[in-house]
Amino acid sequence: MRRLNVLIFSNLFPNPVQLLRGNFVASLVQEIQKKTNVSIVSPLPWFPNSTFSKALFNGLNKLGMLNQTWYEYSRIPYFKNWNGFNVYYPKYPFVPVLSRPIHPVLMTIAISKLMKGIIKSKNIDLINAHWVYPDGVTAVRIGKQTGVPVIVTAHGCDINLYGNYRFRRPQIIWALNHASKIITVSEALSHKIIENLGMDWKKVIVIQNGVDRDKFSVKENKNDTKKLLDLNQNKQYLIFVGQLQEVKGINNLIEALSILQKRKTLFFDTVLIGEGPLRYEITQLIKEKKLTEKVHLKGNRPYDEIPLWMNAGDILCLPSLREGLPSVILEALACGLPVVATQVGGIPELINENNGILVEPQNAEALANSIEIAFRKEWDREVISKGVEQFSWRRSAELYLKVFEEVLSGE
Image (cartoon, rainbow, N blue to C red):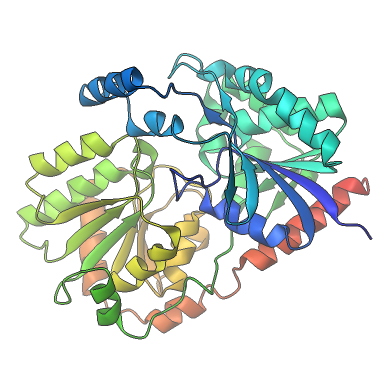
């Protein structure tokens, strides 16, 4: 049987500037490509790359009108080899906020020629689009034009948030109706697609994210790990890994830390790993709350460094407002790191009394209480790590390949 030719289409894929962007998709694709021929297109918004645009960005950023992410797009090349993958990063026109309802239209116009060229030259059998809007909508349009079946994977906010927007909702429903199959990363997300968007349950398949156990595992000596990261061996650390954006509840975390400081129970330091649109706002909030000595912004770190931070840390905190099934939680648990996270999306499918604490979202007082309880509790890191042994990217990829074969066989 010949190898399938698969086109992965998603803005969620690492690039030379945004190293942590969509690593969960990249990890899955690395396993899928072991048994298929993979082509990757990762469309991104266009932003001008010039001295003037940089000056304009700096001015708008200081006013809080633009964020670092937009300028980063201008530095990402059209084509780049990433970890052995040839990845296209085509740009599509957009106007922040204003053009969001028509992103699929703008994206289709900008990348249609590239996509059709790849489909023809690589003899593509199917397209797997990760992120429903605008990626999934665009992929389905191009799939209908070329006769190539499309499988759409929903990850979280593309359904939890965008599915409620007046102009995006009908486009999402159209794309899901015309996709050959719909994959979701959690049971919670599948229920939302079936119950809120009216999809046929037979068309929706749950394939949970995996974790790379070769990278993410319990290190024997925490002090050695701290030394590698230049951390104080006598301190405890709360770790956050993710984009600095509203949906991740990062403001709520800073408020919770402020509450603990007022109680005089902030006996640990916090490390924030990641970049995003709230970088400037979070920096100012940290200063305002007088937390500059206790909260450390580390920016984006290489993906291979993340397991070190998780082994050096004592608690991972993810206070998200919405989620699918966050890979960062699986990665933390694989490292034996207990988790304090909000009870949203698929997170309750991962967290139990042996590995973490769940808290309601947007409640800084409850988050502060849970963080303090977590630090004072004795956790068994080996038990935590063994509790997620069933999650692997190899297993996830095998399930994806099964869906690919079902679609191509007409099942």
